[in-house]
Amino acid sequence: MNFLEAKILSDAVVKPGNILKIDNFLNHQIDIGIIRQIAQELCQRFSDAPVSKVLTIESSGIAIAVMVGNLLNVPVVFAKKSETANSTDEKYLSQAYSFTHKKMNNVYVSRPYLLYSDRVLIIDDFLADGQAVHALIDIASQAGAEVLGVGIAVEKGQQQGGRMLREAGYRLESVAIIENMDCQSQTIRFREQL
Image (cartoon, rainbow, N blue to C red; front, side, top):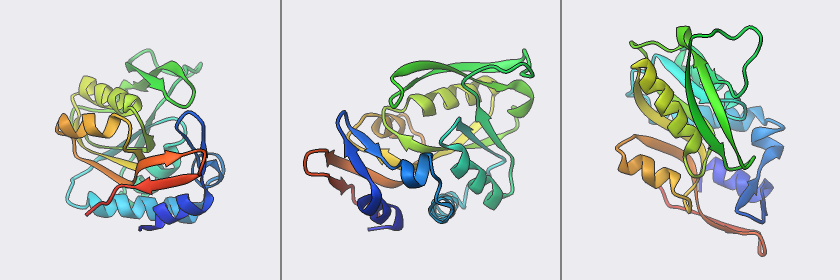
């Protein structure tokens, strides 16, 4: 059992609807020590990849992505879900359905921040059905950037996202992969990783 699996077992709450509530350390209140360990683990797993930019989606993936970018000493770009008054008209646009929020989001990255020459590492906190990651892959593709891999803190292995990415040939590294979980008994079982 790794550090993140142990933290999930000690702090998580399984909610009805296949929801894993870990907002006390990952995506509402942020435990910097855990985020640092996740980032170090992902950097180690992608140590052979010549990453020039980290790409994530707002908002929960930003903390991990920034820590990864810091360790790799590369810029971090995050896809925004809503336009602001100072956003440029020139942008790469895709759509992602949010499993947590149960809605479709338009997501975009301003064109100057993602280039044809970029070698991208996609980082996110959760992987369920893979909608956010596919939107980021689409945005990177529009820019002509190369996606070197996808790093995830927690993958819900019982959902299709991870399988689909692996079958499509993407290098996917997840620190913790949940095989199954039950809200009645509050049990969580993790997939063995080599």
